[in-house]
Image (cartoon, rainbow, N blue to C red; front, side, top):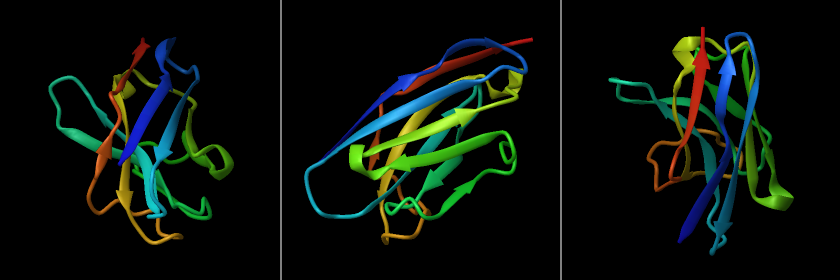
Length: 124
């Protein structure tokens, strides 16, 4: 069983920055890719970025490339999402997610665990 606890988020003006954190409590030795999804108002939940269990490889959606950076501190079982140059269209509830994966594979084929979500609002 894995529990995910997010923090960060809030309200920021367009062009500003925010950082999200997600701490995973992992009860087994199964390796998980971890990442972020978001759900914008009236839209389906979508992939944002993910990081391999090892932290050595990452992937992100085209819409956030060059603006968002995902990283992982394995010693703390924590992933971070640094969001820069935020746009109003980044406004969404951001969810931390974990899915079983190989140690160096950032792909979340199937989400096994979700966090509770944290609101990010970008004003124009």
